[in-house]
Image (cartoon, rainbow over all chains, first blue to last red; front, side, top):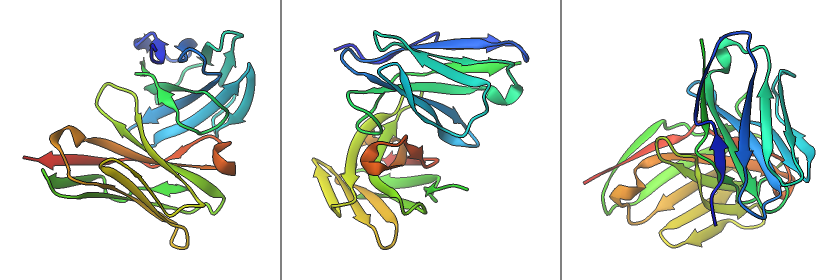
Length: 113
Length: 113
């Protein structure tokens, strides 16, 4: 089976812009979760989608949003980018809901200048 | 407030010896715990999990121990191998894994030849 894929792998944006990141889960997986990894805060949970519905949401401002399509692919969007949004954004998929064995993609490295 | 803590940012162990990675948590609602391993430029890889109804779970060289009264878990790797050098993350979830994962900040394990 192909693993979780994320596009793009690297991205440079300017403060104030918006960005959309994409995630394709493992075939058959219906749950997609997003995480932000920074050196200071570590891995932090953003949100989880299951069957196109947001199930859980972490403690992030409303500038961070996401969605899931009927084929389970997911996108996350960050509007009005700030320097502090520079991070590695990781997507993970799992067969069932919640925190079961999640399989992570390689991440998208976002740099905001 | 960090709900999952890995107090050792790094740990150096000789090849062939036992590696013990520790993790403490504060949220008494957590009832499902996982360990992930991460190499540079890759997403985390699931290693092993444990439910709060157990106090030990083994998978090959990896064993996770859970002490609920102390809100402490540990990952034992025996024997340690050079390929085990990576960052190890402890993660926890509530509601039997139905909630999103809360991660510790990781411990960088270095296996010395």
